[in-house]
Length: 157
Image 1 (cartoon, rainbow, N blue to C red):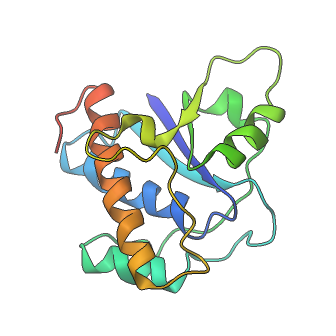
Image 2: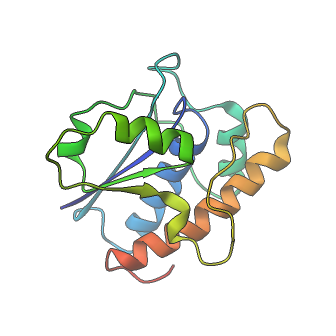
C-alpha cells in the first residue's frame, strides 16, 4: 500500500482538492486498494469542517466530489503513516519539515514537482480571491496528480 498525504494551511481548499482529484484518478485506474489518499492542514482552525464551498463547487463542475472530506491537522505521526507528504507551497513545506522526527522514510516535497505543464512550484492559496483562483488551482492539481500517478505506477490519466 502506497500512502499519500496532501498538505496545505487550513485543509479546506488546496489539499482537499488534491485529495479528491487524486483519489478519483486512483479509483479510475483501479488502484484504490493499493494507494491510500488523505489530506491535512498545518493549521488547526478548520478541524472537522468541510472544504470551502467555492473549492467544492469548482471541483464538482469537473465531476469531482469533495463532500465527504473533513479538515484535519497535520501531525508528526503522519511521517510514519505516509510514504509521500506533499505540500502545496514552501511555507507549509517548512512547517511540515519543522515537525519531522529524526528518523522517517516519508518522501516530503512540493506537490507541483510532479506537474509537467506548468512552471509554477507552488499551488497558490485561492481562499481570499475569486472563483478564477479555484479554477487555476484545479488546473495545477490535475496536472501534478497525473504526474504523481504515473510515478506511482499508474498511467498518466
